[in-house]
Image (cartoon, rainbow, N blue to C red; front, top):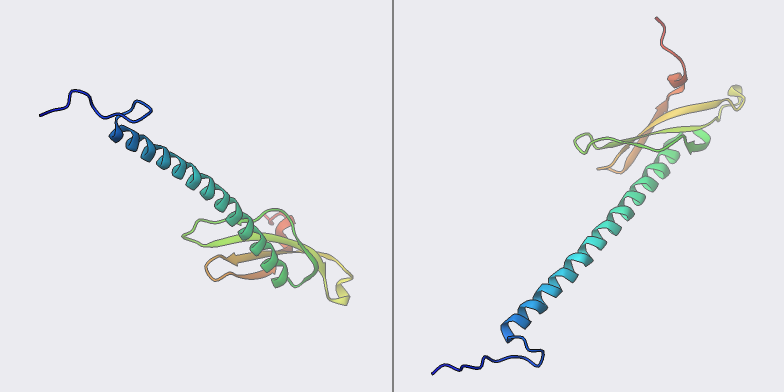
Length: 127
């Protein structure tokens, strides 16, 4: 025998529909939460990478008062490096505190930096 009056909740909704609505609401909140976490994580991860590049490159520099001369160039993951120009003064007495520039390459996989003199950056090539 079938019941002509379907079961309804106090809200006037069939029980299976109320369960479906609750699950849908939970899923929407979960996706919203994951999206905000992913965005925050990405920002934090990028900031951490920038800090690691700067700290490692300044440490690898042979210049005194070494500081980044701009932002790093991010190479594709297939290459796996960031490049950063470093400015500072030469430590050697005979250089008389001359300003120098170094190119630093930061290996993201191994988290290591190497630098080399790059003073020719400001000079034009000879024809």
